[in-house]
Amino acid sequence: MKTKCHLVIVLLTAFLLQATARADYQKGETMFQIYGGGAAMGGRYHQPGVSRDEEDFADGAGVLGGQFLYYISESPCLAVGFDVSHAGFDSHDSYRLLADRFTQSSADNTTGVFVARLVYPKGRVRPYIQGGIGAHHTSLSLDGTTVNSSVWEETNTTETRSLVHDGHVGPAFEGAVGAHLYLTDRFFIGAEYKVLSLIGKKFTPTPAGRLEGLSAPDGSVGISAIGLMLGFGF
Image 1 (cartoon, rainbow, N blue to C red):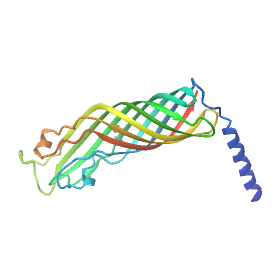
Image 2: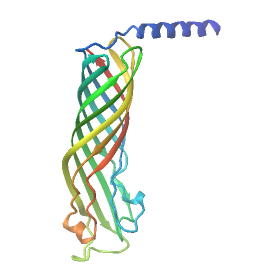
Image 3: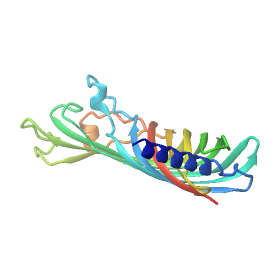
Image 4: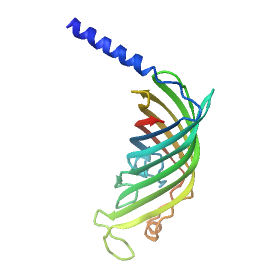
């Protein structure tokens, strides 16, 4: 047993020493990484007498994205590039957002941001902070179905109706922190926590939504995401 433990320690030490041989980032280097994880959206409807949990635009989402970076200086170690991501949010269901209606709300977001990244350039583990500005497209959908033997008053029918179906383009701001763990001289894995602030006009309810007294939802929302990444430098 002791022999096996010693062997594991020796192998781990050898791996750490080999990985730390990764050269410092140099001006002119480039990096590409892909990432995936989970995201949450901060947007809400604002209906009188309804709890905040019932007002959520959507539930959690899977997020996918990619980043390309170019190092423009070594001291400080600074890179610039772009970050593109997409999140399709799950439906948020409610029986209380609107009286006698079962509602399903979902959202979709694509964001592209020009970023600047400040990196600790040495060693096997390399943390960084990142910020940027760009643009986003965000859409919101809300469908309603009558419940409790109710009907749509103007037609006396019970079909599912679209209450919100709108989207817009607006400015986006990003802040992120993360770290890379180098497995070889070029390849790394990592983790990142990101916050997006998305600015936009109000979403417009459909005629059916206005008849239900639905307030125009605020189009400026926030997204927070955490994910894992795989990348390489060249």
